[in-house]
Length: 206
Image 1 (cartoon, one colour):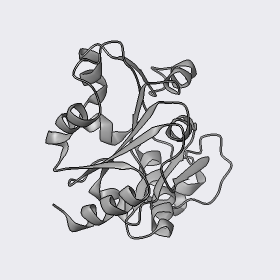
Image 2 (cartoon, helix red, strand yellow):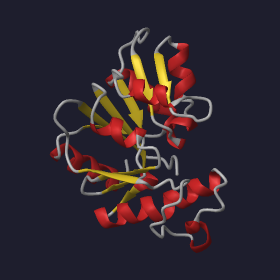
Image 3 (cartoon, helix red, strand yellow):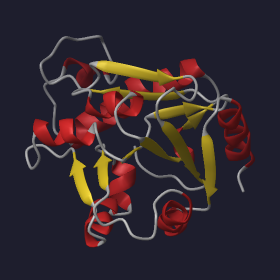
């Protein structure tokens, strides 16, 4: 197992999180069902933040096939009302834009649905994070979120008119289509919910 993953795990545990190491996406669902979700999830309300990582394992279809009630963020296919219902989920899954080796978890958002749900509302929050998102320090995690992830997502969703696209870095614009309107930095386990972190020894997501 990657030594950087183990270091990151140990520092997350010190910050109060329950952490699982996973060899890769082929074992990810087994980890989720063994440690987080019960065998029968019919009737459980689950929220999904938009995540390339979760899409890679097709988690939405997997949960729906097991009869969970799932609210996920996928405009224009889903609504703002779905996002609000996800805030009261039994379990909320998301990834992170970056995580530092000393245990800071960083996310940026244009709508704020993921960042809000990661802080308050759901009974349990589950971060699923590939090793490609681990960087040495908080400053580098913020840098990755703003100047790598946001640009990559703007490319993916064809937002060529955003001012950041010409310079390939965040320029603190006020564009209506800006996808970095809010940033959260999780320093420790919060009061009021239980937060799990699954670290994958595989590159996943953006």
